[in-house]
Image 1 (spheres, one colour):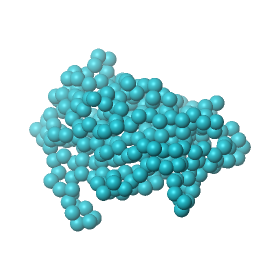
Image 2 (cartoon, rainbow, N blue to C red):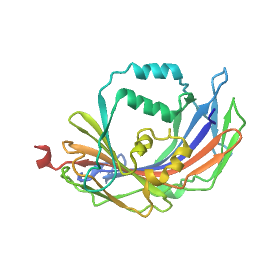
Image 3 (cartoon, rainbow, N blue to C red):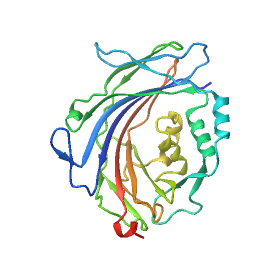
Image 4 (cartoon, rainbow, N blue to C red):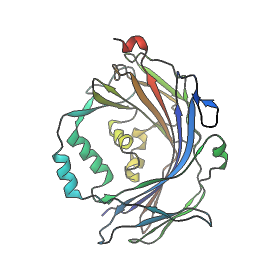
Amino acid sequence: MLKTIFTIAFITSRMMYPGIPVIPTQAGGETTDFSNVSQSVRSDVAYDGSDEPAVNFLMPGENAKPLKINMLRINKAQSKDSAANRPGGPVINLYSGVGNAVEKGQPKSLDRTELKSMAMGVIGNEHGFAGHTQRSAKLPKVMTSAKAEGTYAFETNFADKVTAEVKGAYLAPTELLDLQKGYDLTKPLPLKWKPVEGAVGYAVNAEGSVKGARVRWTAGAMESHVDAMFPGKVPPEVFKKNIKTWLLPAKTCECVIPAGIFNGSTTIKVSVTAYGAPDIRDTAAGIVNIVYKSTVTAPISAAREETAK
């Protein structure tokens, strides 16, 4: 049986809106750039007991109150039957790789059954999973006060107490550069971003809709779609093993989406995620997975003359 996986993620998030002059804020100001930091915890439980699994999360600080993680149990047989009974037909076209032209043999099309099977394989058919956002605040002031350091703990009714000493820090916000108001999506689409200190690599993804079909592209290997489509559910050892092919190197701060992948879309969503070094700790009670990442997301619109075709 796989060990229980406890994940603590320290996440910096950013939204950018190219081509929009300003957006009013609740504080009365104006911006086209929203950022926040958050902390999330989850537990993927390998559990055979008759009682319902229970997990409490304890944060650093004398006055910190335990946070209950509500667990969801997955029945392997029922999940398989549900997937098999779903109607077929292509629902998503996957592309991967960078450069001016689409690689030979793409796209890879998945139907509903294949997509469900992929998700089941990642989550683990006999695992429960849950997530919770602990705190969120606006940048940039919060970056000077948000602290990741401290001792965190998980208490369960099926394993010994698990503690983890965290010494890392939130990554700085990722920033996309040279965004335009409109793009010709029949041509290669260049992306640039500022380097993020402490990043070991970047996951670059885009998604949109073409003629009613969902389309996704990733700069990494085709298999890295698994991590992009099911964030937080990829076993940490799998991510660490594939980090060199799933992510662009830390020294790389630009790439090109091949021409024509999103031709016919009016708007696509582009994201760049900087990942800190994997921190995986194997304890007697389970694996503690500590994640540091910083994601920027931006909508990119097709040029008007292109969408009119």
